[in-house]
Image (tube, rainbow, N blue to C red; front, side, top):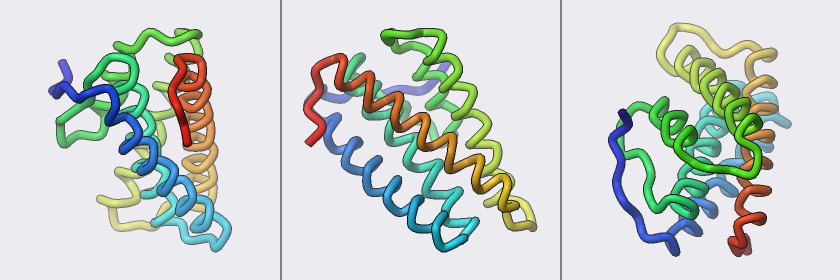
Length: 140
């Protein structure tokens, strides 16, 4: 079970702002072909995105040091399309595996893995954005 902490719903905007900042950075790093920071930014963006959705819809987020805990929290959230939520959870897990290799092994992520991480990030971000809009969140 994921370690979690309760967070007031209105604080979702803090995590959404963080998510937006990291997706912008990820896109810039992808454009400049900076593999390592692109993959790192993609991972942080997706975690912040899942945190945003979790705080807004269920009032909690993971407090564990393992980023994989975000995938467990995601499974707890009732969304408009649970099959899509499960697919997004798989993308998140795959992205975090790329990040782990990039940060903890003695190699740069390949361009292919970098692009995969960026695509996954974009899909996760868009899913969260759509779910937040459907739930009535203000995304300004």
